[in-house]
Amino acid sequence: MFPDGYAPEELGPLPDGYWEAIDEAEALAAIRIQAERDCLAIAPLWQQLNDIRNPTPEGAARFAAIDAVRSKSNADEAKARKKP
Image (tube, rainbow, N blue to C red; front, side):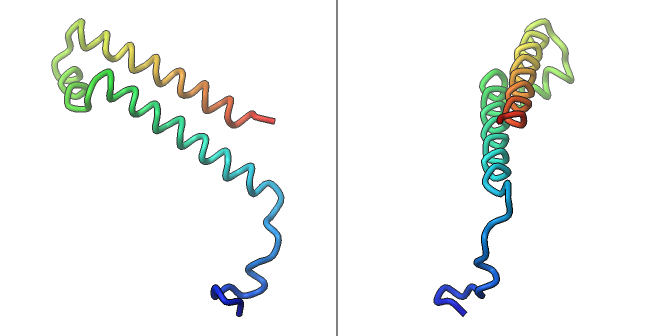
């Protein structure tokens, strides 16, 4: 055993594509977190629920803005997956 408790076979080289997969996962998580923040900045969850329950023109405008954020987020995720 090595001093940190790892067996030598556990310290072999990482598989091909390891860092690309980690970087992609982190990029996708960051995109999703930012999209969630943007949606909640437009309307907190309680307001979204009220807008579903009691539709108004203002609520429809909020949902349109949230849909735009989601669309942008989906496009950003697609770009992150297709990076060279």
